[in-house]
Length: 214
Image (cartoon, rainbow, N blue to C red; front, top):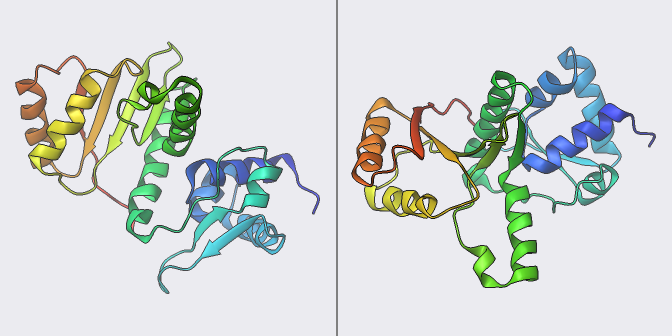
């Protein structure tokens, strides 16, 4: 199959994020849905994408195959279809696109890419390089500021939040953390925890309600 530059961008985007929807790909790379769906079907027929129908009434979840990732020059392994994480992953794709649009010149590194880089560093430098929290994504602003993004679609227990917040307190790879919570109550609870630990300079709780369903 002869691939266009846009085809490669589509495959790379799907591989980097692991799971996306046709709608997200259409919004990012096409001007309308019909041509996007036709091209996605062609890429699927060529064995470069796979579309899984999780629920009959929901859009398919699109993933890059190993061949698709290779053709796009993206060195991340194909994502498995983790049903428990579909809603979180798709909502995170939307959030990443919103943040990139709101901050011109910024760049997004996915959790999959961060995990790959951490493993490579661990193999090269020993176990100490595996320390620290791997966020849901990393937003690097045009100024160079590194912002770890955490997205919670359901409230976490205080002990779990405390553990994660403590990991960022000793993490030198990020400058600040934007921690998105599913409700105003959760934001307030997170803000209290941050204040108690003296991490107001590092962690900023934000409101983000989950708006993606598989």
